Amino acid sequence: TYIGSILVSMNPYRLYDIYGTEYVLQYEGRALGENPPHLFAIANVAYYKVMDAKHNQCIVISGESGSGKTEATKLILRYLAAISQKRSNVPQILEATPLLESFGNAKTVRNDNSSRFGKFVEIFLEEGLICGAITSQYLLEKSRVVFQSKSERNYHIFYEMLAGLPVQQKQRYCLQGAETYYYL
Image (cartoon, rainbow, N blue to C red):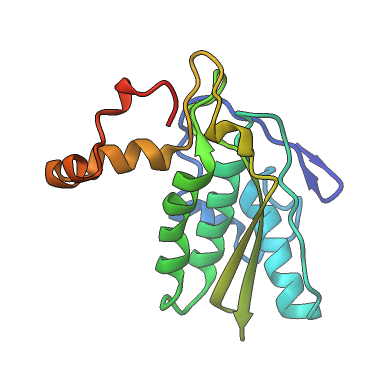
């Protein structure tokens, strides 16, 4: 639901088909409140305020662990990519997300892909087209490197590295399977 220009949303813990092309078209260029509350409505208002009023915009995504902040960020980026006419840098920006998540996300008791850091994402536009982005990370949970609670894991990158290394490299660096380590 909306509270003024604030969208309150929640993670339903199931997939809904409400983020496809037909929804992009439904929200593109529309005023806030013209359609039902949606992440795309907020992204659309921010985009057109940048384009029409030439004012920088900020979308704050906040919530508890597992509330859907990471997914909401990805959906907003996909919406902005969809309404941007030029596609040159857009795939690179969207494809960087899994790599960033590997270094900053971990399995917790409440969430298998929990961000253990804060993100500040800047999107740069030239004449309405996405031309670049910068993601700044802060508040990295450094203690997770040397300690995890029961049923939790370290950052994804350690497990992905062990799973993806060829046997020769594992032998060269005296590495074993992830299950053999108390912590990674």
